[in-house]
Every structure is written in structure tokens, then in C-alpha cells.
Length: 209
Image 1: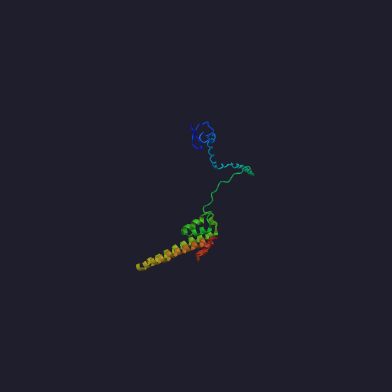
Image 2: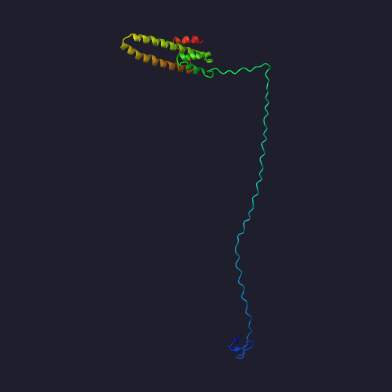
């Protein structure tokens, strides 16, 4: 490889230390320097991994079992004496659970028919209150029927025009009046009142005892 003087530029031998043209000193060639290594890349930030701590396991304690003690029943049984026979079952009499005010009201429901029924129905027929209303229902029904029959016979003996008027009066006086009287007696009996009709009530009270 040709070598040139750095001062005058003349060509010279590769091994020459001095320039033959101008006499300048030629510095020995320096070996090429290796390129410096590239700088290391900047470190990448890495987030620290979370340290998971497992929660402590709850210590489960089984609740104590309830100590159930079965109660001890002590039954004192007395053996019946020899020769004892259990009495046969007797059904309660009809109307045993009925109150006397309801029974007294029902004495008037079917006129003298219900009055007779309650006079023979046990044990209500032993109650003075029920007996009184039963007798008063019977006597009132009989008196009402007798009075209506007598007046009706009298109206028949009259002329036809008066008979027609009498029939209308009979409906108004006897039937509507009798219905009002019957409802009034039922109301008094239901309120536990021993309401007495004139004459008939005194007779019913004596029969009731």
C-alpha cells in the first residue's frame, strides 16, 4: 500500500521513517481502534409481583349438642277394685248444649207445636224459664185460634158485603197483629225476660211451677 508524506504529499515507501523529498518525520501508522461497544439498553421497569398471602382458615368449632333429657312421666295408676264394671256410654240428651234464652225463643217459632216439643225435651223441660215460655206459647196459640174461629163464624153470618170487610179486617188485625205479637214474645225470651201476657201469662207461670 502506497504511503504519502503528510507535509508535501510525495509518495514514499511504506517502511520509510523520513520523507525523501522534504525530510519530514513520518509517524508510524497506528492500528485501527475498534469501535466502542454500544451502550447497554436502559433497564425496563418491572412492577413487583404482589405477594398473595392466603388468609388464615377460620377455625370452625361445632356447637355443642343440646343435651335433651326426655322427661320422665310418673303415672300413678290405681287398679279398679275386683268386681268393678265400667258404666255404659250414655249420649248426652238432645238440647243439652242449648242455652235457655235460645230455647225460650224457639218455643214461639212453631206456635204450640214447638211449645209441646220443649216441654218433653230433656233436660230443657226442667228449666222453669223454658217451661214458662213453652206453656205461654201453647196457651197463646190456642186462645188466638179460638178467637179467630169465633170471629170468623160471626162474619159468615153477616151479609156478603160485611163478610168481605170482615175478612180484610181479620187479615189486618189477627194475622199481622199476631205476627207482631209472636216476634215480640220471641224477642223478650231471647233477652232472658219472663214477659207475661195478661191472664195467659199468669196461667203459664203457675204451670211452669
